Length: 516
Picture 1 (tube, rainbow, N blue to C red):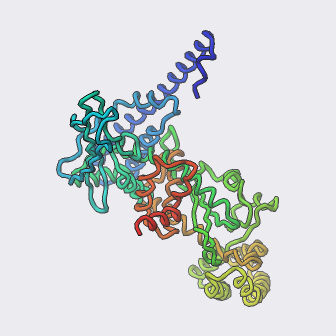
Picture 2: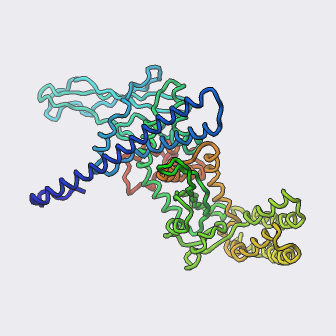
Picture 3: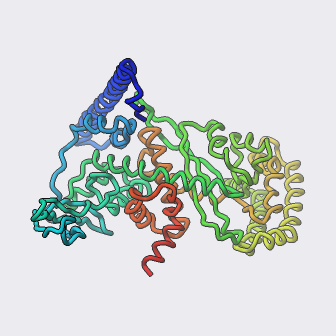
């Protein structure tokens, strides 16, 4: 924030100028370094593509894809200003980007005219036509491109020559070319359909619309900044729950400098109490971290108090020490260990364990969606006797098998977490397993199969934010692209103190009310 210049003496003004100059120099060096790395990557990709011609190498294909994604992340990160104070300088430093070309003539045009509301000048004089300003917006409707042409007639007063014109309509990204529908389409294609930007650029080119990857990257970066307050509101909603499902998964990330990959981590926290008959909207919040240290979930859950349903990850254990968070273990993890043994070895003990666990799940199927009191009563009368019998059987079976066997390891896993596995029988709000979190991570697993996940840590953070909004839209039965289109149409001018109104469940209700 700029200090009050009227209160500064000559020495203070000189110090301020020197400090701003130093800031500009540092920023310029960072921008030049980033531009240099972008150019280097482009040359390297071109070289590898020439090597690729005439022969098929999966390793070379993979290397090219990794470099393409790193270039994509650098260009996306470049869209974020270093600070509000230096934003104009950053834009000037990026002036070497490809010049904006006219939108293709073959695309259909939809003309929207914004005429002045005044019929006469404030002086009482007659208004006459003085021409018009025309601007165009590239938009996406399901399945095709179209161009929105904004026409704003200008009128001038015949008496005082005052000029009157309607204000330009707001755009999601200031002075941006893309409409909210196209921005939503690019985001969903990247983060839900797992299409990197360079592949999207190739697809759009086949439709006769040439969009540079750097342009798409600018749009992703701009949207990420726009959506930050909404993601924070979503996080607050998730963390205000009394029960959460938590899980994490590794994500490959390009390490800075050496071009090699490292393993980052994507954490998911799910609020979904619908199985206990609760009408509170479900939601999921993702967070990215460069490693799996336990300090990350501690930071994520600093404001949470209640029951955490999670796996046996050691990094969660310290969360249960103070009593603010109670542990509830996952029966699906127990079942999975016996299932793998049954598939691999057709173990009779594993088959018996699976049969007993299936009886517990049959009870859960009967009471799904019922109020917590009914669920607790059913578990007390029907599940607890089965659990006591299962516990005795596991202890007896452990004494009969080799301590070094795989079946012994599966039994010890269950017995070692027995107290946490019984938690769901003490509270009708709690689930028998952590499948809600595992379902939320499926989109990440699909993305890993299609391409290297993130070109940088900042790319992982952007992905976590978009996964949060897309995943929550799905949980609430909304089409993610339609939801993001509606959000991006409104958010640029939306009061930040009312940002919760754009959360999926609130926006869905508001949209239905307006349309009806």
